[in-house]
Figure (cartoon, rainbow, N blue to C red):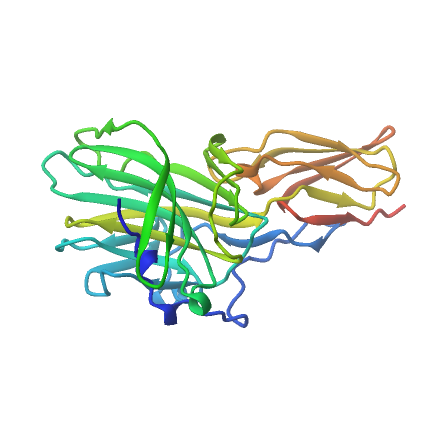
Amino acid sequence: MYATAAAVVMLVSVVYLTAWPSPAPARPLPAGLSRLHSGLLVADPLDNSVTLGQLQDQYVLDGSAGPKLGSVSETTAGLTVGIKAHHGWAGWFASTIHAAGPAVAWHVVISPTALHLKAKGRGLAVFAVQTATTQKSGVINYIVVAADSRSGSYRWLIGYAHGLVAGASTQVLWTSKWEPVARNSTLLASQAVTVVTDGSHSLSVWFGTNKIFNSERLVLKMPAPFQAYLEVQSSSPAYYARFNDFWVAEDAPLVLRGLREGSRVELAGGTAGPSAVATTEAVAGREGTATLRLPVPELVGTGAVRVETGGDVTNFANVPYAGGDVLNWAQSS
């Protein structure tokens, strides 16, 4: 149906730079708690005014549109990826330098542009998760979640693509119904997208907290690790999209150690972008460990932890957490 800009990525652009700045920020904990392991691999709210050089510390900016047509900028409103009016299909993207996976969740909030009835052509706002082995193998297989806009209407789609070096064919796995664009709207409604894939056979996609697609029988052939692409494409019109709240975290529970057997632990009031994690509870076993299972779209946030041991209650406010985090409570007595 179309080829993403990821399908024509220049092989020299995707490099492994392990000394590059960490894509996961420091997350100070309240006194008494320490982090033995961090499950947060990437966290970028994409809500700061930064220079082009700062962007390039974390992302490769590239695509078939070329730098004369394509642009990427970040302000307090978000990361805007755009293409000027042109002829033929073209794309421009920001792809992560760092790679992760496969046992991780990929999350971003997409705000696509609306193309009205008189606008000719199509535009797509794309979130892609692609194998990071392209430089070595030439394989450009990837998962794609996109908003497809044209002629005053739009829809969302989920698919995957297979290709080698400079071409990829896309198989659409799911689409929403075509919806009309409101007359005076510029940006369509934002959509929080979360993707989990093993790169082999399984793929799950959430819109907000709703699981939209799930399969364990695909033939993806995506060697791990993976990289994310925040991307736009257009068949001719100028087109742009905005991205916010980008994170990658281990698809794993939050673990709290250092407890007394039988202690009840509760995580509540968490916030993760526009959504709040549902209250989750666990009881510490004989080894003094409580395992808190989190909904996949809400694996990253900040919440309150309550520990009840017998009649004693200890509260920790403003605890930053992520799936896969292992925290330890150093009790004074």
